[in-house]
Image 1: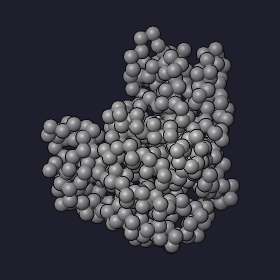
Image 2 (image 1 turned 135 degrees about the vertical axis):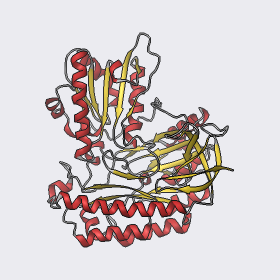
Image 3 (image 1 turned 120 degrees about the vertical axis):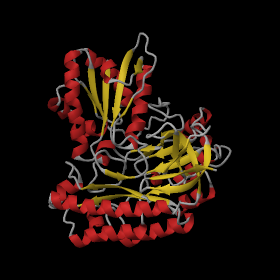
Image 4 (image 1 turned 90 degrees about the vertical axis):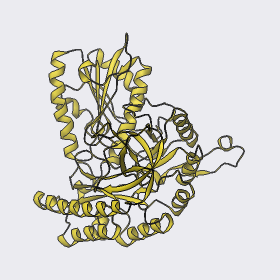
Length: 479
């Protein structure tokens, strides 16, 4: 899954809360205990926090936007690299002081860092009372009861079935326009650098009927965009029973089928998805995207490296020519303006200078709209940590990363300049960060567009003539 704290991101303004953790918002809490949630890492964590909020509301808790007002604090954590974990540990130091002032306060760790460290986390961080992995969120009220009685409470069991399909998420810090919808959990791809299969378990898909119902409910509530989430959405698969599929015969529902079902809810409901594994995205998905105007023409297709030998060490299951062929197919079916973004790692084990140059040349070939770029960080328990030496010096990793960043800045600016003089359909998400006199929203390619407020409101679609741009943002006037 993409979108990781502490990595370098060249993309439109921050929608997913990468630079700052997303927190819970205030609810009316007369006679109730208060829950505060801080989320770090990928979009999946933010979606999971909304599930946790729903579970805890049913247990009698209301949410608050400040840790100081809380009776219970959860940090929903990321373990994708060491910097992500250190960020959480630094946050725990602050909470230690808060707990001294308020001894009855309970602190819980959720998510991938909790799953990776398990009970060891309780030994290392005395302030932590509760540890719950990504598949244990239904059990949290019981864990809270155990912690309230003075015990340390842990559940890090990984499930083969849990999808939380029946839990209606509480939308935290929502703009009321865009929402995440989880369609599957876990990952079966054993990329050698990645800890996710060990912290989120095996792949399992959520039933399509519950997904469509959730998206329909969001549209009925006024939301106008959903992002379908999974570690690898293209491997989504659900086999319907005869009863579920009536009056049609029972069949397997693929990701392309699911996309079409959601797109048919309403033409004004815009659909995005993340993340796609290059080996799994199919022509069927691409043709479905082309068929429906409300499926955004944007694909996040992580390359990780531009060199075939390094890709083999990463266990990515494709090589450079195969990846380039997939890029060519996307642009053949969806056109040159289809937005494409990537992940790129600098300094993976044994990467040579020539192989690094191949990553830069792949970027030159594709010309990504934006990218998530970071230096390799060895994670305990991964296949790479077991099999390969982390043998690239940190200063070399950083220098290579800076070269990747510089190249992407050029490409982002070039790709944005293509839109100057074009009219873009934009879904308004709210005021721009810099001025209340301006509104902002995203176009089809997931690029942030800023324009004068006028009489328009969030949740409306507007046509904006793009007049100027930076490497991250388009600016224009409503026409």
